[in-house]
Image (cartoon, rainbow over all chains, first blue to last red):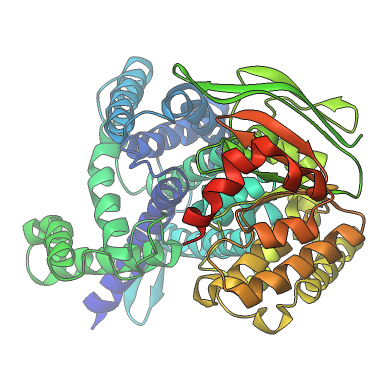
Length: 288
Length: 256
């Protein structure tokens, strides 16, 4: 029972990280119809920027994540302007090739600045707390709480604020949004900024638990693609449900079966979804 | 003049889809653009509203050059349009669809929304009032809470008009508003367009249904092969031999 509670919290923390990272990917897909393979690289850069603000500048942990998120939001806007915007009228394969190119560029950039070796970021919250006999580290609790706060703010932003509603409008019908006087360009930039900032928050939260390396984004890319396909491409509730489902499946199979199966579970889930319900759990109507 | 179009043209490769078209639209008038299929009517509309970039000529709206401005810009300037195939947000309610037209007239910021400032809430109420008023005006208030993708086609056409009206346009461009709807609904829609014009909104429309045009329009522009062949009142157009040859003669086959 203690082991189960321990793993439940691990699963929730991992799920929170997956959600934050996957929502950005699904938003970008919903608005621009681009499978942004460079999304994991933004996450990786976000982790390094947090590390930079924490160690080189010496700001407190939460502030470091916030500042890194702002920097990455700007990187996200630049990625949209410089790479994807000029390709807006090209065939879809060009976007994918460009995204892979951006991914390699970001990886190489991180390697030049920080080196190829692993780096460790110490958690400012090293204590742990005992819940029903299980030892839960404060870092995991911080992850869960932050993820819940950020996800609620995001849901509120998209549903209630005018800027958020423009995102939903462009997702549903690009031409219709133009007719209502909404600029698809502004929305594209806003979406990329939001996606990169969310990925950075995810990365900053998980960095003290995992190690930093220039390729840390590639492993995440596979997982979050599995998540948004599981949840339904472009669906935010789908990304949230998918994120927690996959994290739980991963943690529980690692504990009760073997860690090798835990690593593979994402792909088992992916294959099952594609075979049984290819539109995902929360299917959205595909844009005409 | 509210709208002054001079020498407007659009080439696709070597083909002149629209060539050297002039048009003056006075405030409060209803102007119809007619012509056989492929005459360039829709292309002409797309040039006015910024969906296409003209290859020649100019569009001046309220004394301001708006040639080749992007569609979301022209909406801000006060030109709203609808498409023959409606572009609604089908997974949202009819009310939310109409509210989307209010975004362009809203000034509120993210901070206003977070802090729920009085200004933000006032604007939110105003937007809701304007959207409800547009729903009432277009006669679809009963459908407000239904998903736009699930209401009948006639209602969808009215939703598109309500969105356009919610942006508070001075000029309304309607692309085949009566396309694909019944004769009876066409009459009612014509009445709705007349009431829209009576509110002081200038209307330009592309339409195939001649009966509707003749009773509705103050002036008619006739295009054929992308060029103007006639411009005048419905009575003048009916008598114009060039029009009879190019359009009305072919009309009988087309209506079937």
